[in-house]
Image (cartoon, rainbow, N blue to C red; front, side):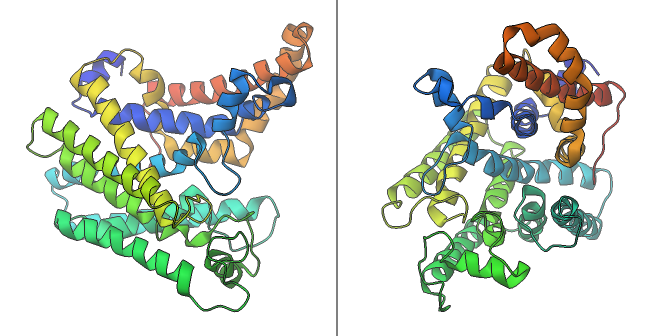
Length: 367
C-alpha cells in the first residue's frame, strides 16, 4: 500500500499520523538518543533545552515528554469507536465487541506486567507501564462507550474526584502527605500491590485517573465519525482542549501537576494538550490536506504493540550491537560523542525500517 493508496482507503490520516509520531517518539527512547541532548557539554544551548523537554520532569511540573503516555492512551480511545463501528458494519454484535474488549484489556495488562518480570528474572507485581495501565483504562472506556456524552464526561470527572479524595483524605498512617513523593496514597497503593514503593514514585493507581484520557479519546473519536461539519468538529476539539488546559493549570496552585501520580490537574492539562494536538493534526492533514510525509510516521503506528515490545525487550540493544563495529569504523573519526549519536540514529532508523518492512508485507500484529 503506497501513500496514495493510504489516502484512498478512507482512513483518518490525522489519527494515523498522531499515533505514528507518538510511537516513533516512544521507540526513540529505547535508542538513548535523547540522553545525549542533556549532557553537560550542551548545557545552555538549544539542544539542551530541547533535550530537557524530552525527559520527564522530576516531580512537579510538565515537560513535553510527560505528554507522550497521555497522547497514546488518548489515541487508543479515539480509535475505539472507529474500530468498533467497522466491526459492527461487518456484523459483529455488542456481545462480540465486549468479548474482544475484555480479551484485549487482559492481554495488555498481562503483557505490561510480564515486561517487569524479564529484567529481574522473577515474578514481581508492578503495573506502572503504558501497556498495563491501558489494560485498565481501555475496559473502563469501553464500559461507557455507548453512553451519552453527559455520562461519559460525568464518569471521567468522577474518577478524578475519587482520585483527588483518596490522595487528600485516605487515612493511612505514614502516608499522609498527599503530594510528597513516597509519602502519599499512591506510594501506599504500590506497597499494597507489590510489597514495595517501586518505580521511583511512579504509581500503579494512575490507571484510574488516566482512564479519563482514554474516555476523552473515545468522545473525540465519536465526534470525528459523527455527522458534523469538519469546522464544527475542529472547533469542539479546540474548545475542549482549552477547557482542559484552563482547569489543569488554573487549579495547579491547589493540586500540583504531577505526572508520576497522575494528579487531577495533570490529567486535565495533559488531556487538554492531547485534544489540541489531535485538533492540529486534523486541521493540517484532513482539512488543509497537508499530507506529504504522513506515511513515514503512520507506518510506525500500524504495528504499535509489536514495535514497542520488540524495542522494550532488547530489540533496540540487539540492533545497536550489530551495527556498533560498522558505525565505529565509518564514523569513529567524528569523535566519541558524535559517533554514539550517529549510532543511536541508525538504531532508530532500523526500528522504523522494521515497521516499514512489515507494512510493505502487509503484516499487522494486533490483539
